[in-house]
Image (cartoon, rainbow, N blue to C red; front, side, top):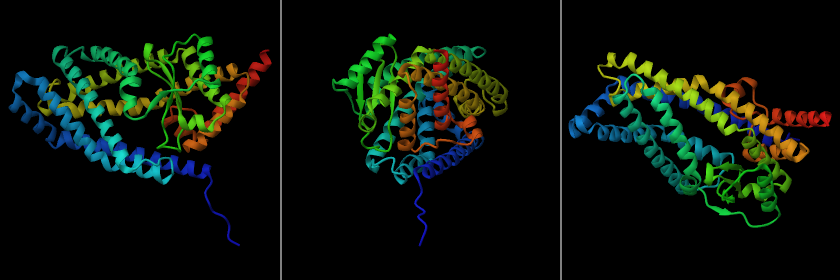
Length: 380
C-alpha cells in the first residue's frame, strides 16, 4: 500500500507563505540593484539632462514630470516578470485565482497607470519643495503626505476601487439590518453596506471599512457572503468597528506621520550628503534614485516596528469584537475559515511575524480571543 502524500491546506499555506517570503527578498534585492545601477551608471543623469535640453531650465516641472513617468514605467518593465510570477502564476498554482491572463494584465495596467499618476503628483510636489525650501522641505513634504493620504483614502471607494471590482448595495435582509444596527449602536455613519465581486478570485474572502468621512462604507466580498454564517460576518465587522471605536485610524495616521517625517529627514541627509559628490544639487531630479533608495531603506528598517504597532491594534480590535459578540466562537471560526480560504499560514515563525507581518498570526489571535472572553467572564 502506498501512503497518501496529498498536502493538506495547512501544508500548502506554509509552502505559499515561504515562497512569498523568498520572493520578498528577491524583490528587495532587485529594487536595490536597479536603483544603484540607475544612479551610478549615469542613466538617471542622462535622462534628466536630456529633458532639460529639450524643455529648458524654466520648465523644470515638465522635466521632472516626464522623468518620473519614464522612470516609473521603466522600473515596472524590469519588475514585470516578478510581478507576473507573484501575482498571476502563483495565485493560479495555489488556486487562489481563476482570472485569465487578459483580465490580470488589464488590472496590472490599471494599477500601473494609477501608480504613474500618484508618482508624478508626489515627485512634482516634493521636488518643488526641494527648490523652494531646501533646508526645511522635509517638514512641508510630511504635511503634504498626510493631506495626500487623506484625500486618497476619501476618494478610493468611489474612484479607484471600482476600477478593479464591481460594487453594488447589499440587498435588504437580516444581515443588512444587523450590520446597520451595529453601526447605529456604535455611532458610525456609513454611506451604505456594499457587496464586492470577487468571483474571479474564489480562493479569497474579505470584509473592510473603506473611505473617509462621507465616503466611509462597509464592503463585503461575495465569497464571504457565500461561505460564512451571519454571526461570523458580524464578528468580522465588529472587529472593524473595534478599530473605529479604538481610534485606530488616528493612531495609525499619527505613527505613520511620525515615520514619514523621519523618513523624509533621512532622505534630506542623504541628498545633502551625496548630491554634491554626484555633481548635482538636492533639487535636481537626476538624484531621485538617492531619494528613493533612502526612503526604501528606511521603510525596511522601520517596517518591523510599524508592524508591531499594527498587530497591537489588531489584537485590540479583536478584543472589542469578542466583547461585542458576547462570545469568541464566531470570531474564531471566521479566523479559521479566512485562513483556510486565503491560504494563510496560521502559525508562522515568531521572527517572520515580527519582521514582515502587520497582522498577528491566526493561531495567536485565536488564543488571545479566548483569553479575552475568559477575562470578560471573570470581571462579570
